[in-house]
Image 1: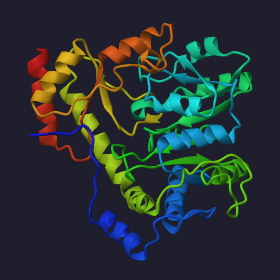
Image 2: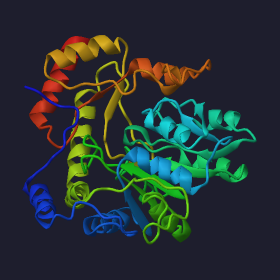
Image 3: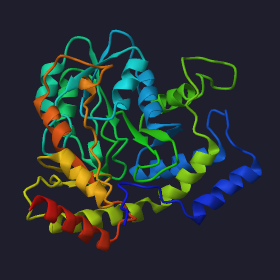
Image 4: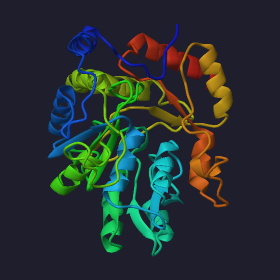
Length: 361
């Protein structure tokens, strides 16, 4: 029995749509509005999250990078991020010449701590980039208040939180821009891909140029841009997956609810939803002692338990900073994620529970 932590769900619908792209030979488009399927996907995403505009790009990293370009973030600017995240968050900042400033997390849901955020703001601060890690929702009320007080922009790294809501409002829509990923392991996929959502028309038009070498009508580069376009094959997959997303999320929630009940008697920290938050359950993450030993034993039983992120960004060789982020460092040593993806059955969940009980008790 093998139970993967996450796996893309590709069915006949996706295959047929990709086949149509290949038959038409319409693999990509350098038009300002993008290709036919790119536009269809963007309309579906904007409708789903209830934003005015969506701009598809070729990765979640590209989405973050484009968002920073759109805000004219440059050398000398500082962008505040949690260190407990995938390195793409920091890389996107460095790629536009700015400096990532690392903020500690709150242990309840592994997202940016507003109290530590306040301490890290300087005259060079320009953007706050909270990460809705594992699908958990950041403390946006407090973060927005801080941003307003210091006249800072917010870009939401919502790469892991498509479908997560706070007070019925979608993550990624609590700031000027929200950035999503459609990487193969996410709650929905395009293979590789990303998107930015915004209600700001000027930002929308600027982002369209940024993803296409700064061009508006071809060969008329007006601002700095790159090739961040989403290919039509990827957009074809994303278009189909968007329609299946509610069903995917429903199964994830069901599995997480069952697992919470099955593991409630163990001496581990289980994931909890905050008031008014509906998590997308991209990753079901627990905290425990002897994490590495536990993962090894779970993996030996075919359970795809995984540690995200055992090395926080500020401790990686490239970003090494002599700073103390105690809760980030605790989480990096303590958390592991268990499978709750839509392919996981109730029998799988009972197997996971049985193995965990045997190991821990």
